[in-house]
Image (cartoon, rainbow, N blue to C red; front, side, top):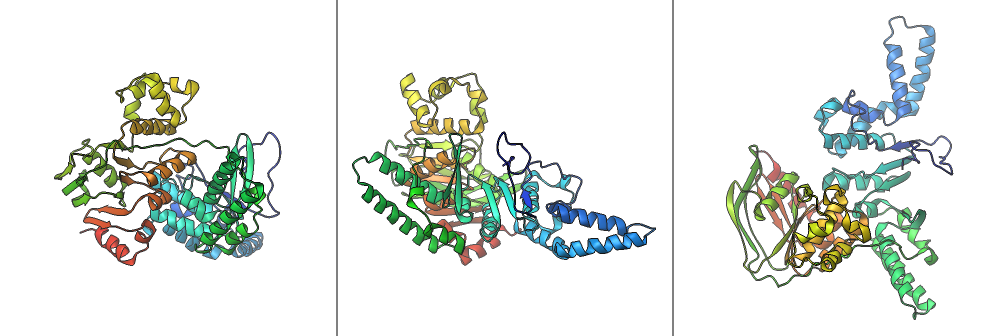
Length: 496
Protein backbone atom coordinates (compact mmCIF):
# COMPACT_ATOMS: atom_id res chain seq x y z
CA UNK A 1 0.00 0.00 0.00
CA UNK A 2 2.88 2.35 0.75
CA UNK A 3 4.37 1.67 -2.69
CA UNK A 4 1.06 2.36 -4.42
CA UNK A 5 0.71 5.65 -2.55
CA UNK A 6 4.27 6.72 -3.33
CA UNK A 7 5.51 6.57 0.28
CA UNK A 8 7.91 3.74 -0.55
CA UNK A 9 9.94 3.23 -3.74
CA UNK A 10 9.73 -0.22 -5.35
CA UNK A 11 12.94 -2.18 -6.04
CA UNK A 12 11.59 -3.07 -9.49
CA UNK A 13 8.60 -1.96 -11.55
CA UNK A 14 6.47 1.18 -11.59
CA UNK A 15 3.10 2.41 -10.33
CA UNK A 16 1.04 4.57 -12.70
CA UNK A 17 -2.44 6.07 -12.70
CA UNK A 18 -4.63 7.14 -15.61
CA UNK A 19 -4.11 10.69 -16.94
CA UNK A 20 -5.58 13.24 -14.54
CA UNK A 21 -6.60 10.62 -11.97
CA UNK A 22 -6.44 11.42 -8.25
CA UNK A 23 -5.41 9.00 -5.51
CA UNK A 24 -6.56 9.27 -1.90
CA UNK A 25 -5.03 7.34 1.01
CA UNK A 26 -6.29 6.72 4.55
CA UNK A 27 -3.75 8.64 6.66
CA UNK A 28 -2.09 6.68 9.48
CA UNK A 29 -0.58 9.67 11.36
CA UNK A 30 -3.28 10.64 13.85
CA UNK A 31 -1.46 13.83 14.90
CA UNK A 32 -0.65 15.36 11.50
CA UNK A 33 -3.75 17.59 11.50
CA UNK A 34 -3.88 18.59 15.17
CA UNK A 35 -3.73 22.31 14.29
CA UNK A 36 -6.80 22.16 12.02
CA UNK A 37 -10.50 21.91 12.69
CA UNK A 38 -12.29 18.63 11.97
CA UNK A 39 -14.06 19.99 8.87
CA UNK A 40 -10.86 21.52 7.45
CA UNK A 41 -9.02 18.22 8.02
CA UNK A 42 -11.60 16.48 5.82
CA UNK A 43 -11.40 19.19 3.13
CA UNK A 44 -7.64 18.62 2.88
CA UNK A 45 -8.40 15.16 1.54
CA UNK A 46 -8.85 16.87 -1.84
CA UNK A 47 -5.51 18.69 -1.84
CA UNK A 48 -6.06 20.53 -5.16
CA UNK A 49 -9.37 21.97 -3.94
CA UNK A 50 -7.84 22.87 -0.56
CA UNK A 51 -4.99 24.73 -2.32
CA UNK A 52 -7.52 26.69 -4.41
CA UNK A 53 -9.54 27.59 -1.29
CA UNK A 54 -6.45 28.76 0.59
CA UNK A 55 -5.14 30.90 -2.27
CA UNK A 56 -8.60 32.36 -2.88
CA UNK A 57 -8.98 33.31 0.79
CA UNK A 58 -5.50 34.89 0.84
CA UNK A 59 -6.28 37.05 -2.20
CA UNK A 60 -9.62 38.25 -0.83
CA UNK A 61 -7.95 39.05 2.51
CA UNK A 62 -5.56 41.54 0.84
CA UNK A 63 -6.08 45.20 1.67
CA UNK A 64 -4.42 46.37 -1.59
CA UNK A 65 -6.44 44.23 -4.04
CA UNK A 66 -4.89 44.71 -7.54
CA UNK A 67 -6.20 44.07 -11.05
CA UNK A 68 -3.86 41.07 -11.28
CA UNK A 69 -5.40 39.75 -8.05
CA UNK A 70 -8.84 40.16 -9.62
CA UNK A 71 -7.80 38.13 -12.67
CA UNK A 72 -6.27 35.41 -10.49
CA UNK A 73 -9.32 35.34 -8.21
CA UNK A 74 -11.54 34.88 -11.26
CA UNK A 75 -9.42 31.93 -12.43
CA UNK A 76 -9.57 30.37 -8.96
CA UNK A 77 -13.34 30.83 -8.74
CA UNK A 78 -13.68 28.98 -12.04
CA UNK A 79 -11.51 26.10 -10.77
CA UNK A 80 -13.39 26.12 -7.47
CA UNK A 81 -16.72 25.69 -9.25
CA UNK A 82 -15.34 22.93 -11.52
CA UNK A 83 -14.23 21.03 -8.39
CA UNK A 84 -17.72 21.36 -6.88
CA UNK A 85 -16.24 23.62 -4.24
CA UNK A 86 -19.57 25.28 -3.34
CA UNK A 87 -20.78 21.93 -1.97
CA UNK A 88 -17.46 20.98 -0.37
CA UNK A 89 -18.32 21.80 3.25
CA UNK A 90 -21.76 20.19 3.13
CA UNK A 91 -20.27 17.07 1.45
CA UNK A 92 -17.56 16.88 4.13
CA UNK A 93 -20.16 17.31 6.88
CA UNK A 94 -22.30 14.52 5.38
CA UNK A 95 -19.31 12.13 5.40
CA UNK A 96 -18.49 13.00 9.00
CA UNK A 97 -22.08 12.48 10.12
CA UNK A 98 -22.26 9.14 8.27
CA UNK A 99 -19.12 8.03 10.08
CA UNK A 100 -20.57 8.95 13.46
CA UNK A 101 -18.86 12.34 14.06
CA UNK A 102 -21.65 14.59 15.30
CA UNK A 103 -22.15 18.07 13.84
CA UNK A 104 -21.29 19.72 17.17
CA UNK A 105 -17.69 18.50 16.72
CA UNK A 106 -17.19 19.56 13.09
CA UNK A 107 -15.45 22.81 14.08
CA UNK A 108 -13.50 21.33 17.00
CA UNK A 109 -9.70 21.27 16.72
CA UNK A 110 -8.33 17.83 15.87
CA UNK A 111 -5.97 17.93 18.86
CA UNK A 112 -9.03 18.05 21.13
CA UNK A 113 -10.70 15.00 19.53
CA UNK A 114 -10.40 11.53 21.16
CA UNK A 115 -8.23 8.99 19.33
CA UNK A 116 -11.12 6.87 18.05
CA UNK A 117 -12.92 9.95 16.68
CA UNK A 118 -9.73 11.02 14.85
CA UNK A 119 -9.77 7.70 12.98
CA UNK A 120 -13.25 8.52 11.68
CA UNK A 121 -12.22 12.03 10.63
CA UNK A 122 -9.22 10.70 8.70
CA UNK A 123 -11.48 8.13 7.03
CA UNK A 124 -13.85 10.93 5.95
CA UNK A 125 -10.78 12.79 4.62
CA UNK A 126 -9.81 9.79 2.47
CA UNK A 127 -13.34 9.48 1.05
CA UNK A 128 -13.81 13.21 0.40
CA UNK A 129 -13.93 14.51 -3.17
CA UNK A 130 -14.74 11.21 -4.89
CA UNK A 131 -11.12 10.15 -5.63
CA UNK A 132 -10.43 8.01 -8.72
CA UNK A 133 -8.27 5.60 -6.71
CA UNK A 134 -8.88 5.01 -3.01
CA UNK A 135 -6.40 3.14 -0.75
CA UNK A 136 -7.75 2.04 2.65
CA UNK A 137 -5.59 0.16 5.16
CA UNK A 138 -7.79 -1.45 7.87
CA UNK A 139 -10.56 1.19 7.56
CA UNK A 140 -12.93 -0.60 9.97
CA UNK A 141 -10.52 -0.43 12.94
CA UNK A 142 -12.15 1.33 15.92
CA UNK A 143 -15.51 1.60 14.13
CA UNK A 144 -18.70 0.26 15.70
CA UNK A 145 -20.94 -2.13 13.76
CA UNK A 146 -23.38 0.62 12.69
CA UNK A 147 -20.59 2.75 11.21
CA UNK A 148 -19.03 -0.24 9.45
CA UNK A 149 -22.43 -0.89 7.86
CA UNK A 150 -22.59 2.74 6.64
CA UNK A 151 -19.09 2.42 5.15
CA UNK A 152 -20.02 -0.87 3.44
CA UNK A 153 -22.98 0.80 1.73
CA UNK A 154 -20.90 3.82 0.74
CA UNK A 155 -18.07 1.82 -0.82
CA UNK A 156 -20.28 -0.83 -2.46
CA UNK A 157 -21.89 2.01 -4.45
CA UNK A 158 -18.53 3.59 -5.32
CA UNK A 159 -17.85 3.34 -9.07
CA UNK A 160 -14.13 4.14 -8.80
CA UNK A 161 -11.18 1.90 -7.90
CA UNK A 162 -10.94 0.92 -4.22
CA UNK A 163 -8.06 -1.11 -2.75
CA UNK A 164 -8.66 -2.32 0.81
CA UNK A 165 -6.64 -4.24 3.38
CA UNK A 166 -9.01 -5.62 6.03
CA UNK A 167 -9.61 -8.54 8.39
CA UNK A 168 -13.38 -7.95 8.35
CA UNK A 169 -14.78 -10.62 6.02
CA UNK A 170 -18.35 -9.29 5.87
CA UNK A 171 -16.94 -5.87 4.94
CA UNK A 172 -14.71 -7.37 2.24
CA UNK A 173 -17.59 -9.42 0.82
CA UNK A 174 -19.85 -6.38 0.69
CA UNK A 175 -17.47 -4.12 -1.23
CA UNK A 176 -15.06 -6.21 -3.31
CA UNK A 177 -15.21 -7.65 -6.82
CA UNK A 178 -11.68 -9.11 -6.81
CA UNK A 179 -9.22 -10.50 -4.27
CA UNK A 180 -5.46 -9.95 -4.34
CA UNK A 181 -3.64 -12.73 -2.50
CA UNK A 182 -0.05 -11.99 -1.46
CA UNK A 183 1.54 -15.30 -0.50
CA UNK A 184 5.01 -16.82 -0.86
CA UNK A 185 6.39 -13.55 -2.36
CA UNK A 186 3.82 -13.68 -5.14
CA UNK A 187 0.74 -11.53 -5.85
CA UNK A 188 -2.20 -13.27 -7.52
CA UNK A 189 -5.43 -11.56 -8.61
CA UNK A 190 -8.60 -13.65 -8.29
CA UNK A 191 -12.10 -12.80 -9.49
CA UNK A 192 -14.61 -12.72 -6.65
CA UNK A 193 -14.89 -11.43 -3.10
CA UNK A 194 -13.26 -12.99 -0.02
CA UNK A 195 -15.89 -15.69 0.57
CA UNK A 196 -15.78 -16.77 -3.07
CA UNK A 197 -11.98 -16.91 -3.01
CA UNK A 198 -11.91 -18.84 0.30
CA UNK A 199 -14.63 -21.37 -0.56
CA UNK A 200 -13.47 -21.95 -4.15
CA UNK A 201 -9.80 -22.34 -3.16
CA UNK A 202 -10.78 -24.82 -0.44
CA UNK A 203 -12.84 -26.79 -2.98
CA UNK A 204 -9.91 -26.79 -5.42
CA UNK A 205 -7.60 -27.98 -2.62
CA UNK A 206 -9.95 -30.88 -1.80
CA UNK A 207 -10.08 -31.77 -5.51
CA UNK A 208 -6.28 -31.72 -5.68
CA UNK A 209 -6.23 -34.30 -2.89
CA UNK A 210 -8.77 -36.52 -4.70
CA UNK A 211 -6.41 -38.11 -7.20
CA UNK A 212 -8.96 -40.60 -8.50
CA UNK A 213 -11.63 -38.08 -9.49
CA UNK A 214 -11.78 -37.50 -13.25
CA UNK A 215 -11.08 -34.04 -14.66
CA UNK A 216 -14.62 -33.84 -16.07
CA UNK A 217 -16.15 -34.51 -12.65
CA UNK A 218 -13.97 -31.83 -11.05
CA UNK A 219 -14.99 -29.30 -13.72
CA UNK A 220 -18.67 -30.10 -13.16
CA UNK A 221 -18.25 -29.67 -9.40
CA UNK A 222 -16.57 -26.26 -9.85
CA UNK A 223 -19.25 -25.04 -12.28
CA UNK A 224 -21.98 -26.08 -9.82
CA UNK A 225 -20.18 -24.18 -7.05
CA UNK A 226 -20.03 -21.01 -9.22
CA UNK A 227 -23.73 -21.38 -10.09
CA UNK A 228 -24.75 -21.64 -6.42
CA UNK A 229 -22.52 -18.76 -5.38
CA UNK A 230 -23.89 -16.58 -8.22
CA UNK A 231 -27.45 -17.28 -7.06
CA UNK A 232 -26.58 -16.03 -3.56
CA UNK A 233 -24.91 -12.89 -4.91
CA UNK A 234 -27.99 -12.15 -7.04
CA UNK A 235 -30.05 -11.96 -3.83
CA UNK A 236 -27.66 -9.51 -2.17
CA UNK A 237 -27.25 -5.74 -2.44
CA UNK A 238 -24.28 -6.08 -4.77
CA UNK A 239 -24.13 -3.77 -7.78
CA UNK A 240 -24.53 -5.12 -11.33
CA UNK A 241 -20.76 -5.16 -11.94
CA UNK A 242 -20.26 -7.48 -8.98
CA UNK A 243 -22.85 -9.93 -10.31
CA UNK A 244 -21.39 -9.91 -13.83
CA UNK A 245 -17.94 -10.71 -12.44
CA UNK A 246 -18.95 -14.29 -11.66
CA UNK A 247 -20.58 -14.79 -15.04
CA UNK A 248 -17.25 -14.08 -16.79
CA UNK A 249 -15.19 -16.30 -14.50
CA UNK A 250 -13.03 -18.99 -16.10
CA UNK A 251 -12.87 -22.09 -13.88
CA UNK A 252 -9.14 -22.35 -14.67
CA UNK A 253 -8.72 -19.28 -12.43
CA UNK A 254 -9.85 -21.27 -9.37
CA UNK A 255 -6.67 -22.57 -7.74
CA UNK A 256 -5.92 -24.31 -4.41
CA UNK A 257 -4.76 -21.96 -1.67
CA UNK A 258 -1.28 -22.41 -0.23
CA UNK A 259 -2.32 -20.67 3.00
CA UNK A 260 -2.14 -22.55 6.30
CA UNK A 261 -5.08 -22.46 8.70
CA UNK A 262 -4.71 -23.16 12.43
CA UNK A 263 -6.48 -26.20 13.91
CA UNK A 264 -8.80 -24.63 16.49
CA UNK A 265 -10.73 -27.49 18.11
CA UNK A 266 -12.93 -27.20 21.22
CA UNK A 267 -14.06 -30.59 22.55
CA UNK A 268 -16.43 -30.41 25.56
CA UNK A 269 -15.57 -33.06 28.16
CA UNK A 270 -19.21 -33.29 29.22
CA UNK A 271 -22.54 -32.09 27.86
CA UNK A 272 -24.05 -29.03 29.59
CA UNK A 273 -26.96 -29.81 31.91
CA UNK A 274 -30.26 -27.92 31.96
CA UNK A 275 -28.97 -25.13 34.19
CA UNK A 276 -26.28 -23.12 32.39
CA UNK A 277 -26.16 -19.59 33.86
CA UNK A 278 -28.75 -17.59 35.80
CA UNK A 279 -28.30 -13.82 36.00
CA UNK A 280 -30.49 -11.74 38.35
CA UNK A 281 -30.51 -7.93 38.68
CA UNK A 282 -26.87 -7.50 37.68
CA UNK A 283 -25.61 -3.89 37.40
CA UNK A 284 -22.20 -2.34 36.64
CA UNK A 285 -20.78 1.16 36.31
CA UNK A 286 -17.44 2.93 35.85
CA UNK A 287 -16.80 6.17 37.77
CA UNK A 288 -20.51 6.67 38.28
CA UNK A 289 -21.38 6.07 34.62
CA UNK A 290 -23.89 3.22 34.27
CA UNK A 291 -22.81 0.48 31.83
CA UNK A 292 -25.86 -1.72 32.40
CA UNK A 293 -28.40 -2.24 35.16
CA UNK A 294 -30.98 -4.81 36.32
CA UNK A 295 -29.61 -7.46 33.98
CA UNK A 296 -31.82 -10.55 34.36
CA UNK A 297 -31.85 -13.56 32.02
CA UNK A 298 -31.10 -17.30 31.81
CA UNK A 299 -28.72 -18.94 29.36
CA UNK A 300 -30.41 -21.98 27.81
CA UNK A 301 -29.10 -25.17 26.23
CA UNK A 302 -27.92 -24.59 22.66
CA UNK A 303 -27.49 -20.83 23.15
CA UNK A 304 -24.78 -19.02 21.25
CA UNK A 305 -25.26 -15.45 22.44
CA UNK A 306 -23.67 -12.24 21.18
CA UNK A 307 -23.65 -9.43 23.74
CA UNK A 308 -23.96 -5.98 22.21
CA UNK A 309 -23.70 -2.39 23.46
CA UNK A 310 -22.86 1.06 22.15
CA UNK A 311 -20.33 1.12 24.99
CA UNK A 312 -17.90 -1.82 24.56
CA UNK A 313 -16.89 -1.50 28.22
CA UNK A 314 -20.30 -2.96 29.12
CA UNK A 315 -19.55 -6.35 27.52
CA UNK A 316 -16.08 -6.51 29.06
CA UNK A 317 -17.48 -5.65 32.51
CA UNK A 318 -20.16 -8.36 32.17
CA UNK A 319 -17.67 -11.05 31.15
CA UNK A 320 -15.27 -10.04 33.94
CA UNK A 321 -18.12 -10.29 36.49
CA UNK A 322 -19.37 -13.74 35.46
CA UNK A 323 -15.80 -15.11 35.42
CA UNK A 324 -15.17 -13.83 38.95
CA UNK A 325 -12.62 -11.17 38.00
CA UNK A 326 -14.75 -8.18 38.96
CA UNK A 327 -17.54 -7.40 41.43
CA UNK A 328 -20.94 -6.24 40.22
CA UNK A 329 -22.51 -3.08 41.68
CA UNK A 330 -25.56 -5.18 42.51
CA UNK A 331 -27.24 -8.46 41.58
CA UNK A 332 -26.17 -12.09 41.39
CA UNK A 333 -25.17 -14.78 38.90
CA UNK A 334 -24.94 -18.55 39.28
CA UNK A 335 -23.40 -21.18 37.02
CA UNK A 336 -24.91 -24.66 36.70
CA UNK A 337 -23.04 -27.57 38.33
CA UNK A 338 -22.26 -29.24 35.00
CA UNK A 339 -20.72 -26.10 33.49
CA UNK A 340 -17.02 -25.63 32.84
CA UNK A 341 -16.07 -22.44 31.04
CA UNK A 342 -13.03 -21.17 29.19
CA UNK A 343 -12.53 -17.41 28.85
CA UNK A 344 -10.70 -15.33 26.23
CA UNK A 345 -10.44 -11.84 27.78
CA UNK A 346 -10.10 -8.61 25.83
CA UNK A 347 -6.68 -7.87 27.32
CA UNK A 348 -4.24 -10.70 27.98
CA UNK A 349 -0.89 -8.93 28.50
CA UNK A 350 -0.86 -9.82 32.22
CA UNK A 351 -0.60 -13.52 31.31
CA UNK A 352 2.70 -12.95 29.49
CA UNK A 353 4.77 -10.93 31.99
CA UNK A 354 7.24 -13.73 32.65
CA UNK A 355 10.42 -15.39 31.38
CA UNK A 356 8.80 -18.67 30.24
CA UNK A 357 9.17 -20.04 26.73
CA UNK A 358 5.90 -21.07 25.08
CA UNK A 359 6.05 -24.72 26.16
CA UNK A 360 6.66 -23.77 29.81
CA UNK A 361 4.08 -20.99 29.57
CA UNK A 362 1.38 -23.43 28.45
CA UNK A 363 2.48 -26.00 31.07
CA UNK A 364 1.21 -23.62 33.80
CA UNK A 365 -2.35 -24.39 32.71
CA UNK A 366 -2.09 -28.15 32.10
CA UNK A 367 -2.17 -31.28 34.24
CA UNK A 368 -0.19 -33.06 31.52
CA UNK A 369 3.12 -31.18 31.26
CA UNK A 370 4.86 -33.46 28.75
CA UNK A 371 6.48 -31.59 25.87
CA UNK A 372 4.78 -33.72 23.20
CA UNK A 373 1.33 -32.95 24.63
CA UNK A 374 1.96 -29.19 24.97
CA UNK A 375 3.67 -28.85 21.59
CA UNK A 376 0.62 -30.52 20.04
CA UNK A 377 -1.63 -27.66 21.17
CA UNK A 378 0.93 -25.02 20.18
CA UNK A 379 1.34 -26.72 16.78
CA UNK A 380 -2.41 -26.51 16.19
CA UNK A 381 -2.02 -22.71 16.44
CA UNK A 382 0.93 -22.81 13.97
CA UNK A 383 3.76 -22.52 16.53
CA UNK A 384 6.31 -24.94 15.12
CA UNK A 385 10.04 -25.68 15.43
CA UNK A 386 11.98 -22.91 17.15
CA UNK A 387 8.77 -20.86 17.63
CA UNK A 388 7.91 -22.81 20.79
CA UNK A 389 11.16 -21.64 22.43
CA UNK A 390 10.22 -17.96 22.11
CA UNK A 391 9.89 -16.03 25.37
CA UNK A 392 6.26 -15.28 26.24
CA UNK A 393 7.01 -11.64 27.04
CA UNK A 394 8.26 -10.81 23.50
CA UNK A 395 5.22 -12.12 21.61
CA UNK A 396 3.20 -9.93 19.27
CA UNK A 397 -0.51 -9.26 19.88
CA UNK A 398 -1.50 -11.96 17.38
CA UNK A 399 0.89 -14.54 18.89
CA UNK A 400 -0.45 -13.87 22.39
CA UNK A 401 -3.99 -14.38 21.08
CA UNK A 402 -3.01 -17.71 19.51
CA UNK A 403 -1.37 -18.83 22.80
CA UNK A 404 -4.54 -17.94 24.72
CA UNK A 405 -6.58 -20.05 22.27
CA UNK A 406 -4.14 -22.98 22.79
CA UNK A 407 -4.73 -22.59 26.52
CA UNK A 408 -8.52 -22.60 25.98
CA UNK A 409 -8.45 -25.74 23.85
CA UNK A 410 -6.78 -27.74 26.68
CA UNK A 411 -9.65 -27.13 29.12
CA UNK A 412 -12.28 -29.16 27.21
CA UNK A 413 -14.86 -26.69 28.52
CA UNK A 414 -18.51 -26.86 27.50
CA UNK A 415 -18.96 -23.07 27.63
CA UNK A 416 -16.79 -20.62 25.71
CA UNK A 417 -16.64 -16.92 26.73
CA UNK A 418 -15.05 -14.63 24.14
CA UNK A 419 -14.46 -10.88 24.47
CA UNK A 420 -13.84 -9.57 20.94
CA UNK A 421 -12.12 -12.80 19.81
CA UNK A 422 -10.95 -11.65 16.36
CA UNK A 423 -8.69 -8.87 17.75
CA UNK A 424 -5.07 -9.28 16.55
CA UNK A 425 -5.87 -12.40 14.50
CA UNK A 426 -5.12 -12.81 10.79
CA UNK A 427 -7.82 -13.86 8.33
CA UNK A 428 -6.80 -17.53 8.39
CA UNK A 429 -7.15 -17.67 12.19
CA UNK A 430 -10.45 -15.76 12.12
CA UNK A 431 -11.86 -18.14 9.49
CA UNK A 432 -10.73 -21.25 11.42
CA UNK A 433 -12.13 -19.84 14.70
CA UNK A 434 -15.42 -19.03 12.96
CA UNK A 435 -15.74 -22.53 11.47
CA UNK A 436 -15.04 -24.16 14.85
CA UNK A 437 -17.60 -22.10 16.77
CA UNK A 438 -20.28 -22.87 14.19
CA UNK A 439 -19.76 -26.60 14.82
CA UNK A 440 -19.20 -26.30 18.61
CA UNK A 441 -21.72 -28.40 20.60
CA UNK A 442 -21.53 -26.31 23.78
CA UNK A 443 -22.52 -22.78 24.84
CA UNK A 444 -20.97 -19.61 23.38
CA UNK A 445 -21.13 -16.20 25.09
CA UNK A 446 -19.30 -13.55 23.07
CA UNK A 447 -18.91 -9.97 21.94
CA UNK A 448 -17.46 -9.04 18.56
CA UNK A 449 -17.03 -6.29 15.96
CA UNK A 450 -16.94 -8.94 13.22
CA UNK A 451 -20.33 -9.02 11.47
CA UNK A 452 -19.69 -12.36 9.75
CA UNK A 453 -18.56 -13.96 13.01
CA UNK A 454 -21.79 -12.92 14.76
CA UNK A 455 -24.11 -13.76 11.87
CA UNK A 456 -22.74 -17.26 11.30
CA UNK A 457 -22.22 -18.31 14.94
CA UNK A 458 -24.88 -16.69 17.14
CA UNK A 459 -28.58 -17.47 17.51
CA UNK A 460 -29.43 -14.95 20.23
CA UNK A 461 -28.67 -11.25 20.87
CA UNK A 462 -28.57 -9.58 24.28
CA UNK A 463 -27.93 -5.82 24.14
CA UNK A 464 -26.70 -4.19 27.34
CA UNK A 465 -27.84 -0.58 27.83
CA UNK A 466 -27.88 1.84 30.78
CA UNK A 467 -31.68 1.43 30.97
CA UNK A 468 -32.16 -2.34 30.65
CA UNK A 469 -31.57 -5.12 28.12
CA UNK A 470 -32.92 -6.16 24.74
CA UNK A 471 -33.01 -9.96 24.46
CA UNK A 472 -33.94 -11.52 21.11
CA UNK A 473 -33.73 -15.00 19.57
CA UNK A 474 -33.15 -14.11 15.93
CA UNK A 475 -30.63 -13.84 13.11
CA UNK A 476 -28.15 -10.99 13.64
CA UNK A 477 -28.90 -9.56 10.17
CA UNK A 478 -32.61 -9.47 11.13
CA UNK A 479 -31.78 -7.93 14.53
CA UNK A 480 -29.97 -4.93 13.07
CA UNK A 481 -32.71 -4.21 10.51
CA UNK A 482 -35.85 -5.00 12.54
CA UNK A 483 -37.85 -1.77 13.01
CA UNK A 484 -39.16 -2.76 16.45
CA UNK A 485 -35.65 -3.54 17.66
CA UNK A 486 -34.32 -0.25 16.23
CA UNK A 487 -37.05 1.65 18.09
CA UNK A 488 -36.24 -0.23 21.32
CA UNK A 489 -32.54 0.57 20.95
CA UNK A 490 -33.22 4.29 20.58
CA UNK A 491 -35.51 4.19 23.63
CA UNK A 492 -33.06 2.26 25.83
CA UNK A 493 -30.08 4.48 25.04
CA UNK A 494 -31.90 7.74 25.76
CA UNK A 495 -30.65 9.52 28.86
CA UNK A 496 -33.20 9.55 31.67
